[in-house]
Image (cartoon, rainbow, N blue to C red):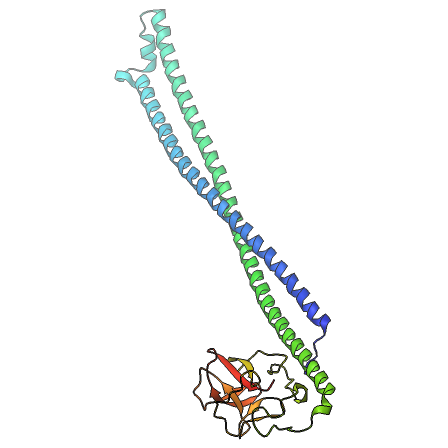
Length: 315
């Protein structure tokens, strides 16, 4: 039987606690990253809306610029080609100096207006283009951040999965060691009782007669001591897909049970003429053979819970 050392179990429990803390930290990071991804997606959606609006404004500005340019060309064409008359002809057709100055001033004013309007529209278009460029740079920054966060989320998810697997494996080992430790303690206790009462082994070593023969002292029995075996000190075990417990003939004499050759064995269990354990089960018909942690038994009684095998004993 494997001997379980206390420091080994303590070390495993410490590792389990550390793994649980690590898993909690990773899960907290995942929650935080999930929040960052959600916020980033909101910002990306807002930027996409700004870009769409800016592109609409840029299209309007370009159309206005083109329209202004076309209007300017028409006015210049009018000034230079009005009724087939040259600009100089129009200017020198002035009837007075005042008329001359007015015509020159008109031409200058129209040209200045067109140039100013065109310059303003070009400046507006350039500003909108710069804004669009800036928004697209922001959009790319959010895309890059989204990729980084998604990659980190995947790495943390893998780390959490690994920690969960390790924690489950370690927990299973801890439970196994605890069961071994309990079985070891039960074995030592049984050996102690057997040593203290070895002088009382006396008669009925095989208990050959009735159900109550030789039952005056529990210390005379050679109790099962292996890991996972039912005994008076480990009163519940799980074996072969069922839960095992015991019920004592000292509490339930079972006079009405038809058990041929009923006797008390060296280990304190009640057995029949063929040395089969006497069992109770609600899942199997009477007469069914069932494998237990103490060997093969036959169902002689019912009335226990489903999934449970009761072994009849003198404990």
